[in-house]
Image 1 (cartoon, rainbow, N blue to C red):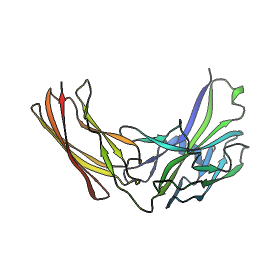
Image 2: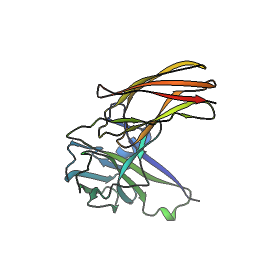
Image 3: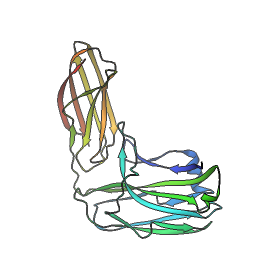
Length: 256
């Protein structure tokens, strides 16, 4: 069975909506002796149909690499971490001048990005995923080194729309942890902050949410409390975005 060793630089949304990079080893591989992609961020205001820019893919390794370039939407986890959604693409919105090609050692290729249509939301948030695998990988046994790099696509709206939506029901896990789904119904990445208080016969507790960027259309889970005693509770939640209070509401729930 062949195993793949992947060096990856993954772009993520930080609390301020900027790009943060992880995996020190991957970053080193990107700049010396591996695969490189630049720029790491395509940004602008106003997602209008037309050219977005050019990505330069360069092979700094000693082997020929089979390259695949794919525009993808973000996938946000319950805790706010984001990764490219590898089950979906943005191909219907973003056209690439090349999606599959081979790069010899030391070679590079330009990939032009074009926005095909203006999104109805006026904004576009996604990733440009670039993978590189040795062309002779099938001949090798054991571990094969491949690369996966991610650049960020961030086209901000000309007219920002702020809108947050809380689920109607609080979920209580078998371990008596209470969570509430929060969805970004707007079109911006402005960080969301807030506070919540829980009161009931089983006691009271409070917590906060600090500068979490939620991809428009995606949801996170507000962790309200853990290991609650049995009983009825009332949660009071206040949420702000872009210094505006958008939500102040209550949710009643029961822990059995």
